[in-house]
Each structure stands twice: as C-alpha cells, then as structure tokens.
Length: 215
Image (tube, rainbow, N blue to C red; front, side):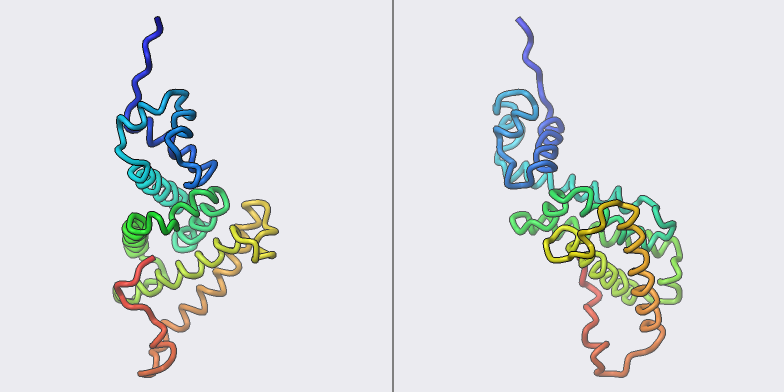
C-alpha cells in the first residue's frame, strides 16, 4: 500500500499561490488548493485554520513577486526600473496585481505596501540617484509617491478596459519603450518643479502629500 504524501505549510501556500495566479482570489478554495496538490482537503486544513489565513499568505507572496520584478534592470535606471517593474508586474501577473489591491486584504496590502515603499526609497537613496541629489528625506518621499502615482496609472490602464493605447501594447518591449518615453517627460517635469521653491500657499504646495504618505 502506497504511503500517503505529507505536505508542509509551504506546500499548501505554494499551491494556493498557483491557484490565485491563475484564477484570482475568487478562485481560492480548499477544494481548488487540494486539486493543485492532487490531494484531499485534509492537508489544507491541517496547516491553516481559515481560507482567509491562506489568502493573507498568498497576498504576501504576491508582494514578494512584485519586489523581485522591480529589481530587474531593463532600462538601466534604478528609478525608472522600480516603476517599470510595477507596470510589468501588472502585465505579467494580472491576477496577482489585483491581489495586491484587494479590499478584502486591505490591512495586509497596506503593510506590505509600506515595506515595499521604504525598501525602494532606501535603495534609491543608497544609489545616489540624480532625482534625489541634494533633497531631504521628506522631499524624497514625495518624489517616490508621485512616481508611484504615475506608475500605478500606467499599470491600471494596462489591466483595465479604458486605456486603448496602453492595451494595444502586446509585447513587453513595446510596454517598456512607452513607459520610458512617458517617464522621461514626467522625470524632467518633476525635477524642474523640485528645483523651484513653491510660493507659500500655492496650489503646488497644497497638493503635496504628507511625508507619511505611502502607497
């Protein structure tokens, strides 16, 4: 008689991750995870108390995938590549992109987003990127926040039904080229603003987020 296979907690999470990667969080059920393991649902519930607990683990794993893609260097510019990595993550992994913006797991996503923001800011400051040359930490955080707004808008158009031009970008190379071109305009525009002190009470001063704002 064949011995039954023993599954670890990691096995369960990895199987759940594959399910969500293909079907989204809506497809995350004990039965679906069991099918991915080619087992019964017993191993699933032996390692997690609820499906929400398993969903949280999958969300954290999705953020890890995003961080890995952001560390790629298709443009050679660390600042551009962080935003570009976010965009390519949305293009390559639409279900995982939706996962890190799930309202159901908003607390986990907020926490993971803050960790991602701080890690990327630390990398940029350590690399002495030109965008951050001569600026204090508060301004650096604002630059990061504005950059994320730009990248998120681009990524959202790729995954929505309203961005015709963006949705026509079938290849990654075309996506990279468009993002780099658009980001060049954004980069120079933002840099010129940073060099000019805003008049007290001006609109540009009012729209700046607090230093505590993160993604």
